[in-house]
Length: 134
Image 1: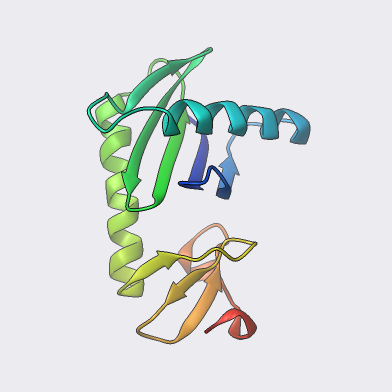
Image 2: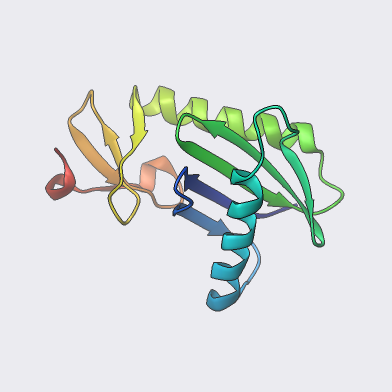
C-alpha cells in the first residue's frame, strides 16, 4: 500500500506531497527532510529501493526532479518503480512538455499551450493559473 508520494527538486525542496495515511504536519516535515536526504545522497549506480524505518522508499530521478513513493513492506518494488515511470509518461503525454518551475506552490509550465496549472488530485482537477505563466 502506498503511504505517500513526493516530488522533490535537486535542491531538496518538496514540490508536491500527497499522503495516503494521516501524518501530523510537524512529522511530515521531519519525514520529508529525512527521506529527501537519503534519496539525494545516493549515487546513480546505487539501487532505487531503500529500506527506511517501517516502510520502503522507491524513487526515480527525471532531470532535476526526484519522485519518491513510500510503501509498506509487502508492496512490490518493481511495480511501484514502473508506476512512477508511467505517472511521468502520463504527465508528459497529457501536457506535451512538462517541466517543474521554481514557483511556490508547485507549478507546471506547459509550453505548448502557454498555460500553467497547479496540481490537484488528478490532471483534470488541476487549476489554471494565468498570472503565473511566463
